Length: 111
Image (cartoon, rainbow, N blue to C red):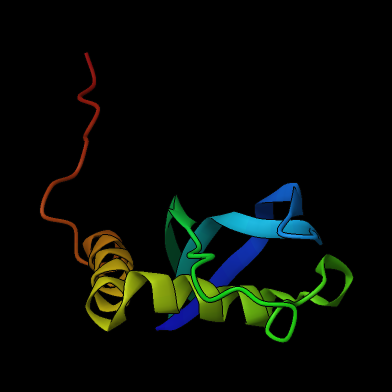
């Protein structure tokens, strides 16, 4: 199972404590992919999460033009905590496993 986090869309305050474009909310997507033979299966979950500004200072501030998906993903995972990150990954894995091993199928019966 390969997981990919996309945390490249953020909400920011134009001005906050003399800093510009301060990120306070992240729109995230967690995608997973599993290859079984030649077949690719995928699923994703998404949401938003607030980023704490409690410890924000000019020394720790990262300007928007220096932000990367990797940096913001780190913020998201920290804000979620280890258990919630694992729960999101488990949800994606479960959805993919349901595609690989369906417990129900839809069949069209001819007339």
